[in-house]
Image (spheres, rainbow, N blue to C red):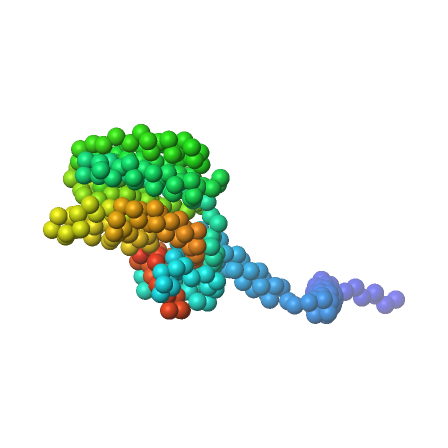
Length: 342
C-alpha cells in the first residue's frame, strides 16, 4: 500500500506566501478600483481639492486686506473752492479734485459737495482794552451771525478773551442763550490770543467726532499774555481738525501802529487749517465778513480717503488739494495721524 505523501512544512510556507501575495494583489486591486472611481467622480463634479484650497487662500488674503484697510482711519477734510470773483464754485465732481499726502497722490473715496455735516463752532471775541470802542458793534454783528448760522443740528459756544480766556456759553443750538452770552462780555487787560486758539481747539475736541469744527476769532491781532505760543496754538487747531476764520479789526490803518506780526501769525494759522483771514476796511463791514464765513461754511466740499501708504502714528502729515479749474482752493495743509506725538 502506497504510503500517502503529506506536504512538508516548507511546502505549507510556500502555499501561505502565495496566498498572502494573492490576497495583497486582490486588496490592492480593490483599492485602486475605488481610487479610480473616486477620481472619475471628482472630475465629473468639480476641481481638485488643491485648487479649492488655493481659492480659499486667495479669499482669505482679500479678507485680510479688507481688515487692514478698515483699520486705517479715513482722512476727511473740507475744501473751499472759490472762483475769480471770490464766490464759491459749486457742482465740481470727484475727478476734478486731486489729494496728495506727503507728495503721494491718494484715491478719493468720498466727495460730498455742499456738505450737510453738522457744525461745531467756537466764537471768540477779543475783549481787551484795545477793543473796547468796538465791543458793542462787534457784539451786535456776532449776534446776527449766530442767528443766521446756527441750525438745529449745529452747536456754537461763545468765548471772550483778554488776559485770560472765558467761556460765556457752552456748545448749544439755543440761539437766544448764545446771543445773551454776548451781552456778558466784560473788557479786561491784556490779550491772550494764542491761548484763545488753543483753548477753543481743546473745547472742540471734547465734542463727538463726525462733525465739522471751526473757530471764528474777532480781534485786533494783539498778543500779550498767552501761555501758549504760536506753534502750540497752530498744532492744537490742526489736531482738532478745526478751520480758523479770523476777522482782524484794525483800529489803526497805518502799519506802524498795528500789530502786523500778530496779523501774519493769524494768517499763517488760518492758512494751515484751511480757513481764512478777513480785514474789513471799516467796522461797518464786520457783518459782511460774518456773511462771507457763513456762506463758505455752507458751500464746502467734504473729501475723504484712506492714506496709502499707511502713516506712522503720532505724526503730522503734509496735505495738498488741487482742483482742475481756474479756481482757488483752500483746505488744511496737514493732519495729525493720531497716537503719541513724535
